Amino acid sequence: MADPAVATGDQTLIRGGVVVDETGERRADVLVAGGTVVAVAEAIDVPRGARVLDAGGCIVAPGLVDLHAHLREPGDEEAECIESGARAAALGGYTAVVAMPNTEPPVDSAALAMEILALGEAAPCRISVAGCITMGRAGERLVPMAELAAVGVRIFTDDGAGVQDPDLMRRAFEYAGDLPVTLGEHCEDSRLAAGGHMNEGVASSRLGIPGIPAGAEEVMVARDLILARMTGARLHLMHLSSAGSFELLAAAKAAGIAVTAEVTPHHLSLTDEALESYDPVFKVNPPLRSRQDVAAARAGCASGLVDALATDHAPHRSETKDLPLDQASPGMIGLETAFAVALGALVRGEPDLRGEPDLGGDSRGGSGEAGSGREHLGVASLLALMSWRPARIAGLSQDRGGDQGGPIMAGRPANLCVLDTEHTWVVDPSAMASRSRNTPYAGWTLRGRARHTILAGEPVVVDFEAQR
Ligand code: DOR
Image 1 (tube, rainbow, N blue to C red):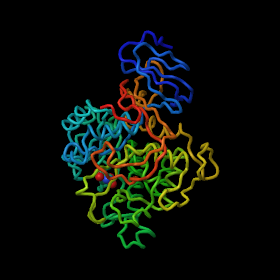
Image 2: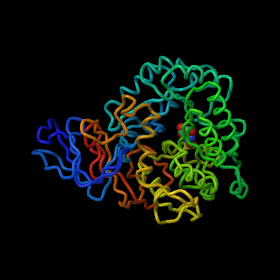
Image 3: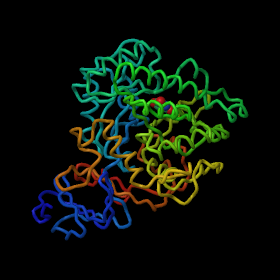
């Protein structure tokens, strides 16, 4: 172990927490200096001049990593910008986010990818950028993927829409197969989804709102799994929401197809019954689904089938969001609430608070033991879904040359979060760092929050407050 006394540069001692990373769990203090973890030990004396961050009663973990955030810069900086989105991320415990490429203009060139990476350098969270699969997200011609990969792009997606042409998608896979990249698909057949504003089912029939069938997602999941098998290239399925998609994913993984998948906190915590309010804040793509779908999403997370939780943080100005349901833009913000919502849904097994359906959990929190079909995750498994597994998918993990996802050991990069699983707070949209207000959890009392976030050794969030 390094001698704390020889630590140089700005020193921070994270004191009194329980360290949880991929290697396990232990009671330890963590000393950070010069961007690096210098020591991890049961009781470290405070070095002279060091800043002390209290972690009593908290978990000290590798920083969270979000595979899916819309930061809206360039093009719609009124809704969000890289800096405000990064601050929201840091407040949520994230030390890295992958910025989605459906900006204006879309990220279909190495030049724009580099511009976004440069803008991200000053941000309080590490910004990685995804590239489009097709030029202008028009679904017609492939982007120069190798050029984008050469400047560090590791995920390609036309998110906001799926790539509709199966032959073009096959060529995208063939191209991607020779590069260190992954294709992320927004699985939605545009013809099947056309005209819908919410999930097609009992709730949409009752409300008389045109629906989007689960099948619109599932046909593209099935198609892309087949294309991934044909080409051997890597596929990442974004924001999966339907029970049928999880069945297809399980079969594909059992067959050895190179596929990973993410689920959002909102698809774990809300159902299509929320649309009974006709409130456009609940309009999102893919749509909030049925109780059965939510239960399948939770079960997929508990069993390890799902690889990552991703926010799909989608800020919108009130001019485009606060409109009648058929005109409102789809999407909800999620970076600042993701940990608490996921903790409630997956670890504590809380039901949907708006209607109290039984979503496959009880309220005891749990061991993650398999068997009953009502199992919950332990906190370490939740952190796997929110930190080290997404870090690998994004190509940001330490074992892939990056600096995210831990483990927390002397000599490793200090990208960390300190999570208070018991902190209760009321979601106040006007107090959030995001420039947009479209959170579906406004007024909810949530339990769990990032108390401190440390980016490259610098405390960027201290006691729930952003430091810059
Ligand atoms: O609801 C959504 N909003 N789903 C998406 O796929 C895109 C996103 C956005 O960009 O607003």
